[in-house]
Image: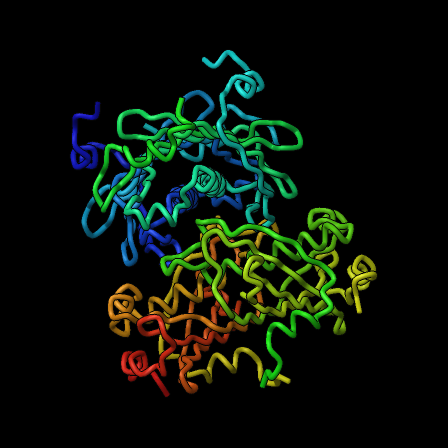
Length: 145
Length: 145
Length: 145
Length: 145
């Protein structure tokens, strides 16, 4: 179904943010590769770094009564990451109704291989109730397509 | 799109396996709910328990040269689990070509609420190479639809 | 220095609580054994279960303004736990000044081997400040030596 | 017992290695601070980075038949780390018989506060059996006091 290669996707995607971090050995499972759940940590860590760059840390959002909540995740696992690898994490984000949809790709920095490609859908609770996302949209304004 | 309620899904799904385990407090994040990545641990733990019941622990599969590898995950987060909750984990599995597709639902045992609904696609490496899944199909034979 | 065997310690220790839980495969590291940090999760999970049995869940303590905080841990690693093992977790607790000192041993339920022996020191913050432990002492009264 | 302040300890300790890494938000527990077990991950991550700098990654040690195994840990928790903090991790190591004893301190890079002070004892298995540590001693030679 996917007729264009990952390399081309890399070139075409209009990422608005990237961050890097090292695989830690305790994240390696008994197969010698990063455990599949750990990638969700990587994705969350990247989104939180992105929010901080956008001007609001997760902690600051909470103080404002905003709590972004993940309501759906799709993850394609491409090539495993291993001990010693550095993650090159890239993302772009779009709004679909009240949802913020993060398109996140994790690359092996040194080989350039795509490790994981994910689509993460987030809604924003305000004072405990689902919101239409206006506050978060303001924070992300300059990053939205 | 989804016009039947989760309750009905629960009644209709032909789960072939279920297992239970408690939420552990260290799995709770700063929002007071189970962190989104932890559910992948729950899903994996359930699949491994299922494999053990089917007659092959993950360790035994490895000894036979089989390594099941997750290649795609879709997770819908419905209602958060919290400290003290017990997870009622149910699944059924089907084969689509060389892939084993696990349909996994995690319920809050005490309220009956659906916490997470996931579709996890697994391929089986044999001696390090992708296989058509024959060995695993044999192990799962009596559970396949 | 330690001239009595672990078996005898097992017989002599006046444990006041025990709980059991299974090792989960994702807790296994690349050496094929439970990662050293995971045992701290096991120890915490056991203490929290103990508190719940004593009448106060961790969440309920928080509501009362109490926050137990770990201030020192000593862990001796004896024999590693592996995939499929069940943990038999036992503990007793004593008060030393304002500190609650938990003596916690984790056994492999099926072999009876001591996996980990730990001493965990906890102080109790009340409304954010160090307390002399009176509230917690009341909760634990019937378990203290 | 400890009559000199942590600041002075900082000045006096002859650390032979330091590394830095960021607290990740998913490491924060429901108290809003880094969970006590996570510090063991930080300590292990620091030792593994140190080994890599010393010329042997953990993976390379394994290829040579060496497996360093933690047999005792003592951790004093001083001041909690929080979301957004950067860990300044420092260590020195000495040999006591067949054991390598790592003295590891984790500081909050920005405040300079000592977060955790730990003593971690490691023995080295060679081809599955306890060794006298000769191979590891050679690797660490220029770092030993």
